[in-house]
Length: 311
Image: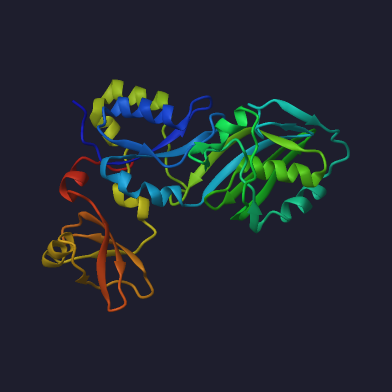
């Protein structure tokens, strides 16, 4: 029988495995009843993939919509059908006399708010079908541009035809498209050869676990060792201020009623805790000073008891 497990695991996804494939392997290790990931990484990509178990799946959307950071290696002078090394080469251009100063000048054009057209090789749906299915059949449709934000774009290295840089960006950013656009601006084209997600907000410096590490833990320490690797459910929304409710207020909140509480000024959303420190969920601050439930745990006592601390 599968276990009721609640918490968040930061997986260091390996290259060559899909996000869902990674999720299923970890889910089997935990023998978990319910789990989901927080947005797909390309198969070639490695790095941080938060996996939500049990009640934590209620808060996966917050991680899906959060900022991300990546380390990228791109090959200049070559364009592919997919924008990365998995695609077929469709064009080559010489890369000669390209300086660091020129690359940094071009990169500055892509910092801040920009419009980006999603690639055909993406999971965006068109008439119920993901675009990548149409792309594999040679069909291309017009895509509307999306407004994204590039908070930081820093060149690390330029050696021969290879470009290495770090990017901190908003949700919905396609790094493959960013690389293609930079290559186009440089006049030589480019595609991604390596991609590693280094952070998902709010887990900038948190510890990740590889599949071999998790397998080793379960062999040496069993399921309890794996549970110690989980982050608590409330960490997914740790950017919201914490509010502790009285026993009576917590009772009425769980009945779906707005309650009075002390919370920081100018807060629109808050994390809600019982008087003994159990995470209840998140609430929305109303104009009259009360807070109404927005997303609550089904059983906070069970959820917290089944979740270990970070290790």
